[in-house]
Length: 326
Image 1 (cartoon, rainbow, N blue to C red):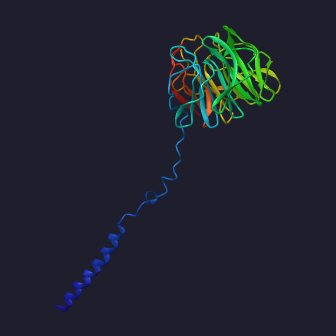
Image 2 (cartoon, rainbow, N blue to C red):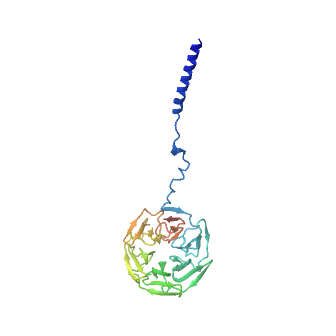
């Protein structure tokens, strides 16, 4: 009996020793990928959208000007829904809008630009009267400077080569040909060669050593005329993909130009055109403009071109919406 008990004990021990390792081998090994705490941190950051909605203006307006200085975006003048020329200036710091220093007079179809971190405003229409007045924003007050030689509205004011250039526009319903240049050192305006094809409601941008006027009317056109300030000659850039007037144009920080919106050639509908000029050889049509409008100026703020206000339909239909493009 002792021998039988001994054999039984030995047999049981052998069974236990064999079963143990088999059970351990069946335990699943944790996945290295799922156990890594840094996997989420290594994921690439999302790419900002090419176009996006921004904080709307406090009020609806169109035919306004826009510029950036001192880390703020300025939307200046314009028309309200009743057709009044506005003195209002709206200032955006990246978070909220506030009312800025009011213009000395109501202005619509004016244009703004930034030189030496100061906002300048030139020309426009004031309750139907053509203006040649010229202002600089100094802190919280507007300083009036020498008037332009040619009152006009629907033009573009561009900052380049340490000067300000005024191109296009009309006065008494007649298109103004001469380009004017302001030298802030001498404080003097001078007339330069007239734009080859005078027109109003142009969209202005700077491309290298060129100040350019794109589109315009009447009639609506695809034409792009650029003044080269190094050679003092006008040059023809590639035509826009589609005719437009009252569109917004700007030059991004990387040197690319773009144009957005406007009215079609017949001035019967709003254009959703969005085109880029990566080089002087051709425009590249991009996706349709987010919230198509006319009657606004683009201004580059925090690395994006902002379009605030404008008209949602031909004629007088102001909106408060703001969008941006990168």
